[in-house]
Image 1 (tube, rainbow, N blue to C red):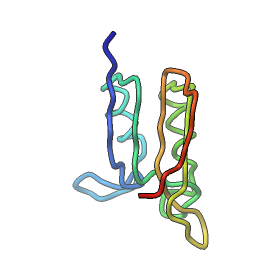
Image 2 (cartoon, rainbow, N blue to C red):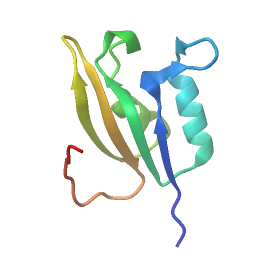
Image 3 (spheres, helix red, strand yellow):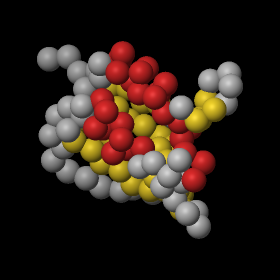
Length: 99
């Protein structure tokens, strides 16, 4: 069995040469990779600089990943960001380890 795993720091959906917020560009790239597991860093969660979107949930829904784990690592007065795992396969255990 082959499993494809992608790890990417999405920088809260801000990037490209124009440094603009476009989560759709991130979604397009992720979709093209057809991964079983997406390990994403700097995923925004209600942060104003990312239109207050819940990016983990939005990406999971838009890309068709039925299983999601998210933990907010950085909190601000409004929103924050953290790490997410999106999976096509059932996730049976979850643990947060602060390194």
